Image 1 (cartoon, rainbow, N blue to C red):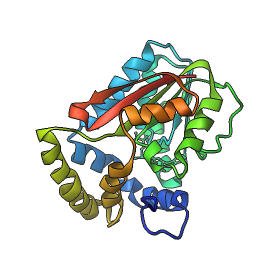
Image 2: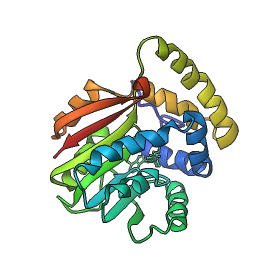
Image 3: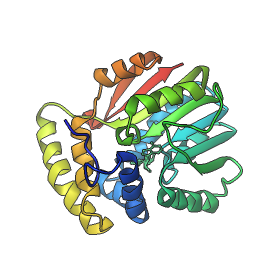
Image 4: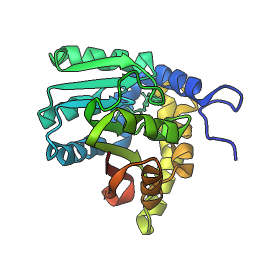
Length: 239
Ligand SMILES: C[S@@+](CC[C@H](N)C(=O)[O-])C[C@H]1O[C@@H](n2cnc3c(N)ncnc32)[C@H](O)[C@@H]1O
């Protein structure tokens, strides 16, 4: 089966993803809050609570986008958070936010690809990824490079959409498949971005399956927690 991509099957997924996030960057935060009714903020807080127990000093936030996870990750008490992303547009919004909150000394954002991280082996105490892994062109390559830059014993925390089960799944499916693309198109002016979202979630591994992939990539002590009836999951793993 062809990979789910934002626009076409000819151009590399990575280029399309960067272009899509550049297109929607100006509306990304607003739509996140509107479409999730603010719930996404609580998900990042939960992930950071888990990470706080590990007392990380130096954190890498991959697929940092507009820097919400990087800003939340600083609340672990870390000295420094470095955020990387392939979308200039998303990072521009993030940099503005960091400046407004006077966090420039502690949070640094830079363009970089999760599959080719510009850092030495064993650099970070923790790596975070919020809603990013699903967008990687080569999932395993990204997970392996994040493992490479983690220090031995370091922690990976991933948040990604999952699939709820039971009665609630029917309500959610309708909302995600029909309401999300409609509202997204209206506000973001990108007719594909918010239909790519449910399509990419539909084919992405979740729960125990994603844990297996983490283990195959070399991570240890892997576990996951469901968030809000299984709409998303937090995955925790160690190097
Ligand atoms: C849905 S946004 C998530 C942003 C942020 N982490 C959050 O929690 O809101 C996904 C981000 O992943 C980035 N991305 C996708 N593939 C990437 C890659 N290979 N390397 C780095 N960033 C990537 C996109 O550019 C986009 O900004």
